[in-house]
Structure formats: C-alpha cells, structure tokens
Length: 211
Image (cartoon, rainbow, N blue to C red; front, side):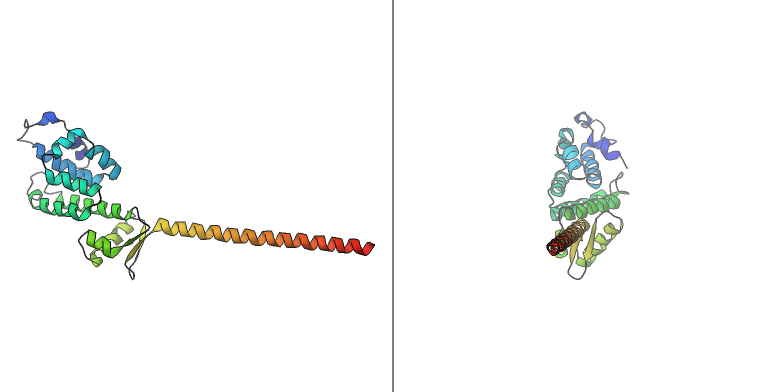
C-alpha cells in the first residue's frame, strides 16, 4: 500500500458509517496513522497528521493509535512501542492489513531509531537500548543494518558502547584542518618576516661598509 496513507489522511468526515461493509472510520485512523508513522518524518507527521483537523477526528475514535502517534512525535519511544505491541495481535487478524503488519512495524521502529540518534553527536547505547526495550547486542545489530543502508550516518564504538555521528567526525576533521592551515600560515609568515629582516640587515650592513 505505497500511497494508501495519503488517501486515508484526506478522508473527510462525510465517510461516517456509510461504508461499514468496506471500511470503518476506526480503520481509517489505524491504517492512515500506521502508514504515516512508517513513511513521514517528524515535520510531515506534525503537519499532515497531528495538525490535520479531518484526520484528527478519526484518531479520536482509536485512542491507542492517537497516543502512539503523539508518543512517537514527542520521542517517547518506550510508550510508543507499548501501544504498538498492544495493537499487534488484532492487526494480524485484520483482513486488509495482516500481510503488511510486520513490514509496517519494522519501518516504524527504524524511523524511531533514526529519529532518536539524529539530534546527537554521540549516543549512549545502554540508554538507547533501555528506551527501545531491547538488548545491547540486539540494538547494535539494528544500528549496524541502518548504517550499512546509509540511513544513519554514524559509527559504533562497541567497546565503550557509544554511537558517534559521522557529521561530528567531519566537524572535528574540518577543525583540525583549519588549525593545520593556520599553523602553516603562521610558519610561512614568520619565515617571510625573518627573510625580510635578514635582507634588511644585510642591506644595512653593506651600506655601513661603504662609509
């Protein structure tokens, strides 16, 4: 269902109970909310879901989906995962969604992992594992996969259990390069001044000998 969530998010209140044999308003909230979580970044989630007046009316019908969306946006991942866990059994029995549940859950979790790491220069993996209710080994495996897929720009320090953002490494490299350039410039200026001083001294020496 690649673009299905867009249709769900644009559904108007006139749907009501007019098409219950096809889809219920609660289904619109569930399908649209989960697909949006798997697809949108935080800005899109805020603009197209949380602040979407029409869709918000549907979300009021399914409090678990509403709360997990708000938890995801607010970076309350443990609570978000709890809501997802409580919904999963019923979703696996859903006639329309059951074939897509595992994929949706994986994508939502990946989005959450990416969102968690994004603001930081370094991340304590022990704290992150606790936030996502997983083991250190399991978290490292998930992060390695996301790094390999170029979805997270980072490297893992397995010994100290820290994730370092690559953009931080690039900043450090740039800073060191600037320092090196500054040192080279300072050295060149000193050499130039010394040469100028020697030339001047030699000129003055030659002038004094003439007299």
